[in-house]
Image (cartoon, one colour):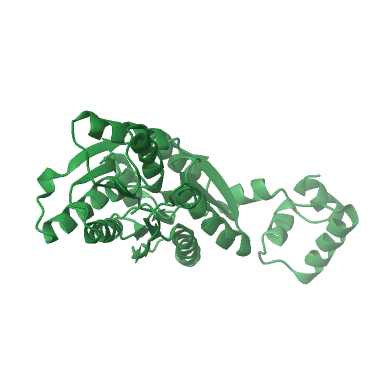
Length: 332
């Protein structure tokens, strides 16, 4: 049933029906006539069409880099819980670690007038930055920090520094580091810098640190550890940029005939589920991904309300950093 049919049956104009449905000004007499027809016919407005007319929805776009990740799943859980309680629908976009696809999702979500975007960031290109600066819709980034957009992120450098200090305190001085691609500033750059700072504090030359820069999967960790061994270097301690990389590295260490932690200690960063079910259990630094997602969603909802009240006013940019917690297990 169309608005024009409701109008004909109620003896009013289509404009009057539209104002009634959208909460606009209308006389009590017309309001009662329209209400009666709607109740008799069981008419339900099309929410999609209505939102497009209003250029407003109660849906929020969530863009994430991949699905097979503890950190991403925990972030999504935190975000989804907050949005669901607030009555918002989440529209998901899996960028598959492709920056171009990420931007396509962002543009599409803006064009379809979603209420806001929550981006689980990995890499910021100049096009990302331009979008942040030019977009009128509320945007929150989780997992990375950038001055032009509201962000909720982790103390990645501090976490890496903490786990390296712990490794050094256990007498492990001949270290290797398996890091992530450095286009990802938080995981690739900040965590490496944290390891290097801890070494300098211990009066160890970070240039002596044997590094392997890989991606994020367990297979990458396995390949990265083998790369270290193939260089002729046998460390007594290994720091990995993520727990998932550490799981793969542990397999390579065992295949080379070394024991963990007898010959080689190993630690990760993240505090994911995988580190709790392997043997020995993985020493790590827990990052608060669930809480990061919750906080990011709360900030986004607040920004959406501000934007609706004053659509022409520039939203303030805020930055929230979460800490970390050392988890001592059997791998060190």
